[in-house]
Image (cartoon, rainbow, N blue to C red):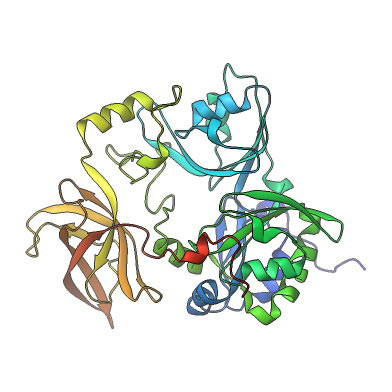
Length: 402
């Protein structure tokens, strides 16, 4: 039967629905959606608190489909990616995943993402934002084919302490043998599906990659398999909380792409963001190498660090000072939260030298709105190592059977 309410024309509803939308919209209780890479996605299903604790104590589903995906293939695929990103792609074995960043000629970050090596010269690159223009410009002179496959791949993140148990019950036999950053192909009920031991929560978890036409069937069977283990969907707000605890960076929050900045000195390099471990100066030339070598030799003027903030009031967007009296500004907070799991007031912040050294105390200028009256507090904040939360189950292979 044809619906009496025809769909509005595309220009009146420009955001796309993911293949999981019939389920995510049905479960959404507070009508809170956000746009991500051209898709409408759930920000909160019920309450942020319930969804946060589900990640840390049970298992969760997060619709990852809007993650922008590119297939990179051809005779020069490895050589091309090794020139594009700062990490040595030659070391990435087939069946493995690697976290990477790529920069412009000045060493400033364009974006970060993950590279999946599916075959010797066949890769999938996942990013939070569209990068096709940069990828194509960088491919000049290489025998490589780059195509966006975002709409061809539906994706779900299954994260939390009981995630491995649920996925095995769902039908992914042998999943427990996957080590962190490994991937494997499975078939469940005749549906091909790829699983990777990756995620954005800093906890035990996996990501599932499938054809869009299989999305609803996979969702329903996962929910059934996880009914006795507390499986529930979560939105972006809860995910943002757990990624801060894990010390992970979020584009447009902890850094802005050099392609988008309009003010001088707003760009960031991977060295300044505490990602020096992603920069391999021993591999062949990559974009930004010379600039990063110069910065390394000169020393860092600023660094993104973790902060342990006194009190229990999150230091959202707080300016940082070298002294309690606020005589010298030395940085600013990019992400902040009170961590229910760590029982700590934590933050990520860009801090100027020499105050970014571990153990140094700076002062966060926190403003609180108390019934429409603003109060100011200066909170001592100690520079600490990241991550704030790193449970053993995140890397345990096989995971505990919960």
